[in-house]
Length: 239
Ligand SMILES: O=C(O)[C@H](O)[C@@H](O)[C@H](O)[C@H](O)COP(=O)(O)O
Image (cartoon, rainbow, N blue to C red; front, top):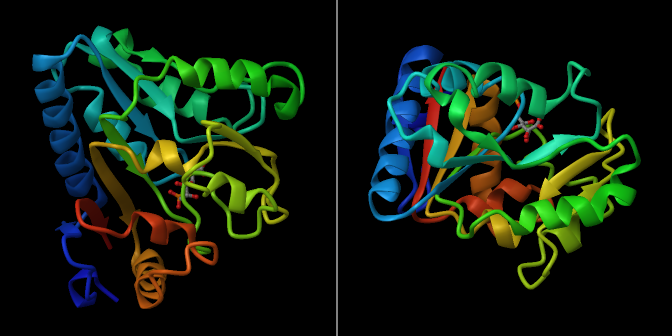
């Protein structure tokens, strides 16, 4: 299935290309432009990115964009609660693939694994998240084939609270049985405030998942990505 066959919700903007490198460049150009425009009027800008495998070419393209990176705060939408030495660490991925080259001057704000359980580290994580200027200027999300985004997993017992738009907490510990690691995620009220939100997808399977999400847009808990399928979302996809 291709994204061109999807009936996207009103106001959701598709960006397609035949290769993941071409989509990565398109997304990197758009993100760099958003950050530049914000920095022209403000002292700093906030970029929130996701982990996983899809963002790699995007990180490598974005880090080469000429920006005042020292004025950009980079944060993770979520993290697997593992040491940075663990291959599953999103912080390590962002450090090694994005905060290089021109982007080496940017500051990674979240999440720093403390040598203790995520729940014990929550006060520190919440304090770090309080440093994050809101609204987020640029948010780049991925999506799993269960409809999760960030670490808002359908099977996480904490999901209802993490997706409660009235919750004060900015960061929440998630324990989805489907995942190998405890997770830490920014909560929905933080994520849905972004000025520019991109959903970065690769492959036919993700389009089939997006089609399922579009079928019943109101049922957020079954597929948390549904909370983002509204006007203004930019979907970047390659086969
Ligand atoms: O920590 C993570 O894994 C991400 O934040 C997660 O939400 C990711 O975006 C999706 O699982 C898609 O991952 P892929 O890009 O590997 O398909």
